[in-house]
Image (cartoon, rainbow, N blue to C red; front, side, top):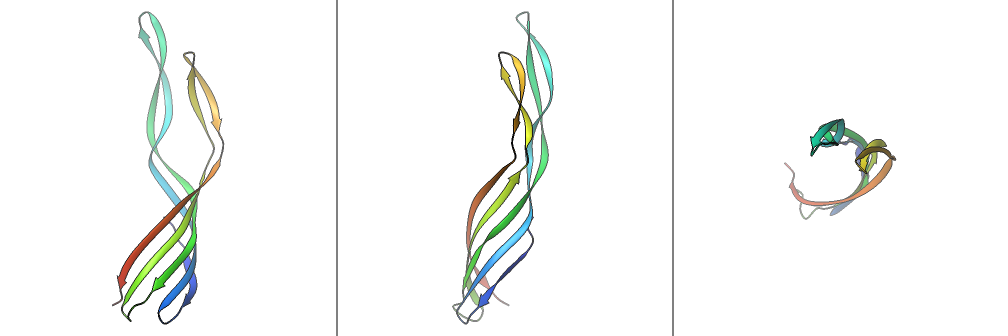
Length: 124
């Protein structure tokens, strides 16, 4: 969910706006290692990771611009360009090396996601 405002100028036939909207982006299926079970196979024990999905929310900001064209007093065409910036927090993960569970850290990372949308609207 993002919240914020667009600011700019509306002229007779078009409008130009900038937007900045902070908020959060949520993911519903983020895998996390819950435990490691030992499984017997051929007389040897092997580690078997057990993962569960969790909901995770990350801070985000949507910045960009909007161009609107007004062909008549009631109709409009809108073009929205933006960059949704998501800050993924660092976490600990695990890898298997020679049948051993080895932890490693994934650092905090900020990623940019370009977005574009276009639409037609009718004012009541």
